[in-house]
Length: 347
Image 1: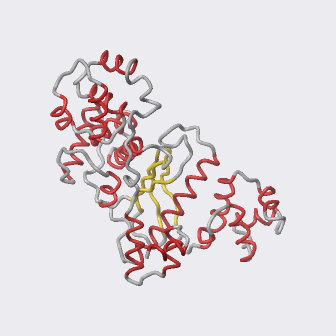
Image 2: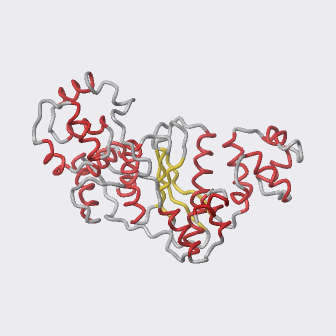
């Protein structure tokens, strides 16, 4: 357990065994660190503290008694992620999951309660992906209105959603985390905190698709997931009710108002209008060559909502456990990665 964590964070930092030894002033040799990683030796407390400081990780990441591991970790965006980038993501996810599970255990909550809305389905056509998005909305009684906060929605239905800093190449991922004594693996969705709100929302909907689409579907799963995400965030009937069945042109301000209504990117809105047959492919091409020329790289009129899509449930549970005297103030601060003085000031 400790050895795997040490190897993971060393790779995350991009350090060789020798470089890590040098960083802790050769308190122990590179060979000794290698033995720690392979479980052949255990570091003393002073050495472990030095290693944690050198690697920039909290000590409890190495000493946590929870035996957790990531299952089926898949990077959805660009397969060219480096070993260091993968290690960075794995370390961050493990750290977040363990803190989340600790506070849920304190409150006697079921960590693996995933309210799967529909069975996994094999998708053969884009229309089937669209229909699946509608089925999920129906199962969760969402109607056809725009979704204000998809992060809160998924957490209410048992998915853990983490918004953390990831490498620029990684938009998001879905995985499961198995913990010692856990009855079922805990489902997790991770999105990149460095991306804008519009992109994060599309990523979350995309990752939800991977929880309900059969990975062996005849239709390419990524294409199906993207269609699902668009339909989930911009339901066809609702959008057609706002713009009409057929259009030959759009003013820039109308598109901006639509993207703010559905809280999606301007580019995603144009693509969705074409998917629904509201505009023809030549109109989409014209828009992307004129007023929307830069919309794929520069978001027009970005949504300014600093508090949205931030996965607030974990913090709420920490304050709840603290209020019920199930954890101490110092432990609550450690779980939320807050200075104790800051937490006391809030209280």
